[in-house]
Amino acid sequence: MTGEGDASKHDEAWAMEFLDQLNRGTQEAHKRRDALAAAVDEMAHGFTQLGLKPWTTERKSPAREDMKVPDVLLGDRAEPAATILRYESAVNILSAADQLRGFAVLLRAEASLMGAVSVARGVFEACLWATAMIDPTITTDARLQRALTRRLARLSAGIRLKNLLGDGVTDADQVIDNDGHIDDAHGTNRDPEKDIADIETYAKGRGWPVKKRPRASEITPLSVDWLSENLERRIGIEGYAWTSGSSMAHGEHAADTASWVELSQNLGTAPAWLIRLWSTGAWAGPRLFLTTLEGYTGRVSLRREYQRFEKLFLN
Image 1 (spheres, rainbow, N blue to C red):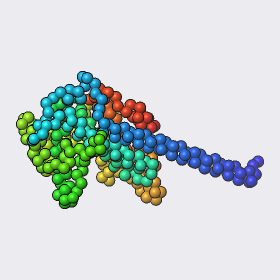
Image 2 (image 1 turned 90 degrees about the vertical axis):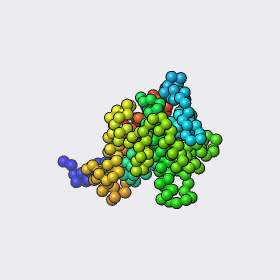
Image 3 (image 1 turned 180 degrees about the horizontal axis):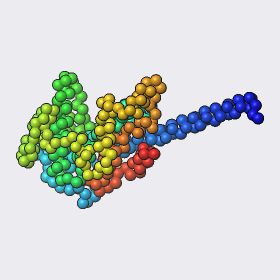
């Protein structure tokens, strides 16, 4: 027979063991969270280098072929086609790097599920645009049409922003080159309306149709939805990563996330495992871009960093 005192001691021991297991589980979860956040930071650093430094290319790669085509004549200046493709891709590579850093901050904080989901969606979108500019499965002309379409959108966005906020707005297209100087070749301190006209004139001279749209002219139709479903190197997660992230960011929550969003208001926390579960864009975007970059340049980039990042993200 077990006495009342023995039962009490047994219950106390069980409770202490349960609390100890909870503490160990919490410590393990924090270790996993911090390891993933560190891997995300490492990817962000790698993307920053890819955005700022020249790419190494193999002799017969599509990137090397782009260097051989005639310069693009835009008004009174000429730009190498490869430079245009590289720059318009790099704008988005650096955007992805910045958002990856933000995603790592949100992972460590565990304070906002929807904030992390929205940032992960931004990572995916930036990687998708960067991928579209260097897609090796299409021709140089097709890549150039995409890049110039994106430049038209960028220039038009700058005009809209300036009209809304007035004069004195810093140009959003400033990029610091490797020598620390402001890059003036792609829109900074230039007349965006003239640059738009020059691009449209060049496109029409090449026989490319230019369609006037409400927000910006298009040489070739481009959208995140279309790209996420039609790029050659997709594996099926891309469309899901975009559409799920998009709906989550606009309030169309799945049942489990709705419950967690409600609960998080009382707990004041959003566990990293839940953030990771609903932030597939933060993984799918870099995977798609790095795979495409390898096909474009003929060289593997960030292999070690990405393998570590993927292992921790999918674990």
